[in-house]
Structure formats: structure tokens, C-alpha cells
Image (cartoon, rainbow, N blue to C red):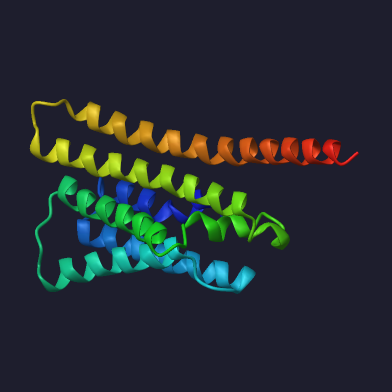
Length: 193
């Protein structure tokens, strides 16, 4: 499963908050998250991905909190909580030395490359880019929530721009690292001749 597919619960949540209650939006995102895990397990087996597990916990936890505590969220306030949770999932994955992109990359890269330092470093860089994008989302939410003098569109533009940059980086950086690795291998091979 791709990173973008794993982020669909966040997209669903953002869309539903426009037409449904916050509680319903949180429960729907939690259900979609659980469904994606089930789909992935049925197709591939193996361990549950850090991002997917964190997403289920985040949405289910916020949904239960909202229901049981009868929390009264604003849309921007709950989006801040969701975006902060997503940022923490990404950050913790780096801190526990399991960058969340690693599990996705292993589905696309031959097993013999999994322990290569360049492969791991590439995944730390990509996870770092997504973590930075999620941090920008949190900051934009904070600005939207607490600095009303800043136009709403500025926060939205920051969020969209940071996500677009992370998507672009996710495609560009591995290709760049692969080209560098091939060039190094060719240079080493030329030296041995």
C-alpha cells in the first residue's frame, strides 16, 4: 500500500467535517483506517505499518474522547488535534528508529537492499520530509485558530504546499539516491579494472 493511500483517512476526515458532525467524521476516519489495515493484511500479511496503527489509534481515540467526554470541538480545533497526532506518529517513528516510510519502501525494493545504509538513510530523509510537512500543518492550524488577522487562505496554502512538497520529495529523492548509488558502483567497478 502506498503512503498516499494510508493518508486517505485524513482526507476523508477533512472532507466529512464539512458535511457531517465532528464525531461522525472521527469515527468514519477510524473505520477507514481499520479497513485499510485489514485490506493490507489480507493482501500482504506481515506486520501492521506504524502509520496505519497510529492512524487507527489517533482517530479512534479522538472519537471515543469526543463521545465519552462530550467534547465540543471547533472544526479547526479538531483538525489541530488530528494534525498534531499525525506529526507525533511520524516523529515517534523516527525516534524509535522505524521511520514510517520504511515499511512502504520494503514493499517496493528487493529484500537484499533493506539493510543497505543508503536505503535506511533515504527512508529517514523521506520520513523527515513528511514530518516537516506535518509540522507545517500543525503551525498553520495554530495560526488559523489563534491569529485571526492572518487570512484563512494563507494557512490552507501552507498546508497544501507542505503536502505537495512532501509528495514531490518522496518521488524525487529515492530516484536521486538510486542514481548516486549506480554512479558509485560504476566508479568502483572502473577502479577495479
